[in-house]
Each structure stands twice: as structure tokens, then as C-alpha cells.
Length: 255
Image 1 (spheres, rainbow, N blue to C red):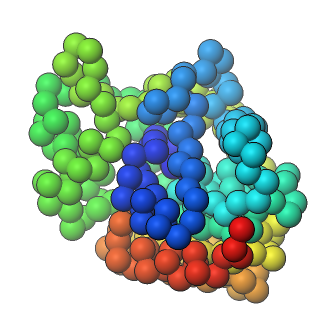
Image 2 (image 1 turned 90 degrees about the vertical axis):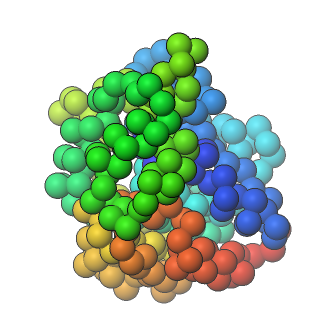
């Protein structure tokens, strides 16, 4: 499950890799990518995404499953673990946890839903790099172009724009919006009986190293892996992330 401003294309490489051993369903949250935009923007909150994902899994007849969630996707994973005891058999939390850093959240609030359009993919890639250069400091232009094509789309008018409903920012602009203020430690602890991988970008301004270490110490089956040279959040294509996910998949129970 992808992050707040991301979509299913974030898993275009990881999903077929994992699918060599397990059945994979890639989630596209409402308001992103190919999913429909919400009529009410105040439904762009984690608890609604939980309901959407559960409805999809039930429709597909999937009773037990493991989750890989980046940022928002990881929050949804934790909430699902709390509300669906026994159904989640493993989880990857990518640069997210029950304690998040205020500075990073404020950075996201500042840019989400903002920005205009660009005339070409190269223009869009350079603008995206200017905005996010501190997150991926070692990226070259071909890396930015690839990431931009995952996160942006071509409009009928021939312009390049972010591939999400800009109204996803609406709940973040109200006091305690976006389900803010919820104590997520009980939801996190609901993952205590299953293989759990905690990934953190070494430069992350969302998940502090101390918080990640605390998470790993809290649960017996948790493993913490830090991805060097990356901020929020690892793309899961990094060798360190991919190796850790492979090891995690090997720990999952067979269907």
C-alpha cells in the first residue's frame, strides 16, 4: 500500500518480484492513480482507507494476508491489524510507525496538494527533484525521471501533473485532521505475533531512528533495517530494502 501522495506504480518492480513466490494484490487508495476520486474530500483519512481495503479484500475472498505499507500504507496496516485480529500474518512498515516527527509532517502538509503543471516529463522531473532533493540526495536525472513517471500523469491537455486528487490535502488543513491525535501504539502492538519488518530511510524526517529502535524492541518478531542515503521514504527498490523484504517473505506462513 502506497504513501499519501503516491500510487500503485510505486510497486511496479517490487510486486512482480514478490509475486514469484506469493500472490500479490497492489492497492490503489481512493483519489490516486486509477482509483476514483472521493465525492467528499474529508473521507481522505486512514480509517476510510482501512474500510476500502477491507472491502476489496473481502470481495476478492482473501481472509488472511500480509501487508507492505509505505508511510500512509503502513498506518493503514497498523489500523487493520487492530481491527482485524488474526487476519494479518505479517507486515512491512516502510518509514512509518506509531510515533512520527512533527517537522516531517509539517513538510508534507506544506507541499501536498500544491504545485502546478509542467510542459514535459523532463521539466516535471527537474521540478520534482528541486522539491525532494534532500530526500534522495544521490539521485541523478534518470532516477528522478523514473520516479516522476511513477508519481505524475499526462493530462488530456498534454501537461504533466501529480497523479492524485489535490483534495487529499483537505483533512490535513483542519484541526486534528487526517485522524491526527490517535494513539497508534495499541495498533502497532496488534502486529506483535507476526513477522514484522521496520524499514527506515537513514535521512528520514518522519520516522526517527530512536522511534524505530523502540518499535523493534517492543515486539519479539520485529526486525529493524535502515536504508542508507535515503529520506522519507525508501522506494523499496534499494538493495538493502529488497534483501530485507526477501528475508521477511521467507518467514511468512504458507497459505
